[in-house]
Image (tube, helix red, strand yellow):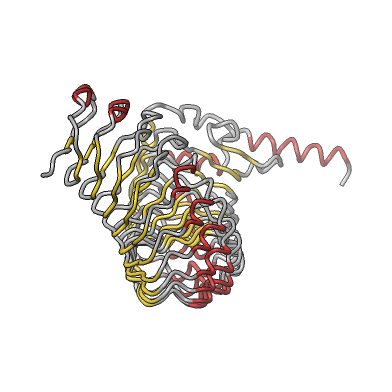
Length: 484
């Protein structure tokens, strides 16, 4: 074929192409018919055009076919429904309809988009089930369906998404059990389906997700045990399983997940002891096990958690003493052990935690004095030790070096005087020393606490006059300094 003939054929092709909108544009117009575009963002989607490549949100290939490979209509205040015509846009690799008010079902024809790599339908009002045809999207890498009204099971075909790296579907009404086929997803790194109605056990097959980094299943109705196979997920960084109905013990195999940075197992029905193997998690920053039925002593191996910032074991049935090894966790900012059955003294080693901001050891059976060194923790703003059997004096310089805003030592056996410096930085909101054996005057410096909301000093043996300037504290709503 000579060059002249080739040019003639190309010219004829262009002439034919220019006569009408190409099929890709026609499919988009069919899709638009289901939309409500109250702000006219799609006003330039017009049938008179030959190709749709300059339309809002549309991107085409640069060859003569002008295939639509990307449709991005996020946050355009669109509503209406998604027509099955979406399945005609078979060249799409990117589809983003997020941040609108679309409703109705996700059409099963979406399974025709076999080239799709990113599907973003989050922050809409989609309802109905996730179509099982989604399993045909073997090139899908990222899928985000969160903040909709989707219901029903995650289909078994989910396991066919061999390229999937990220699946996000939290805050829907999904129910049923997690499909065991999830174990086929070797590339999956993020799986977040919290705040749904998912029940049943976490499938043991999850060990097959060998690249999983974030497992987010909080606020569901999961039951059964945490599978020991979870210990095979060597890349796992975030284990977010709080507020379910998980039972049984915490598997010791969790200690082999050495990439873990957050363990959130609180608000479940877990029993048994805290595994010593958790002390192997040298990268762990947050350990939340509160509101379970855990018992036994706190493992001393937890002192090896050198990167830990927050540890919360409150509202369990833990016994024994507080490990002095906690003092080795130099970056610790929060330590909550309240409402357990802990005994013995408060370890003086806690005074080595220079970054500690919140310490709550309340509602235990602790004895002995309050360590004097706590008064030197400059970052400390919350110190709660109420409902124990503590004795001795309150550290006299408490408040000098730290900007306390909550201090509650009520219902102990503390003696001596109320320290003068508690309000030195005028940050104190709550001061509760109720029901101790304190003596002496109420220090006048308490009136420096302009932000004070609650003051409880009664049921002590205080003497002297009532500081009248307390009446000038305009934020004070509770003021009980008497014996009743």
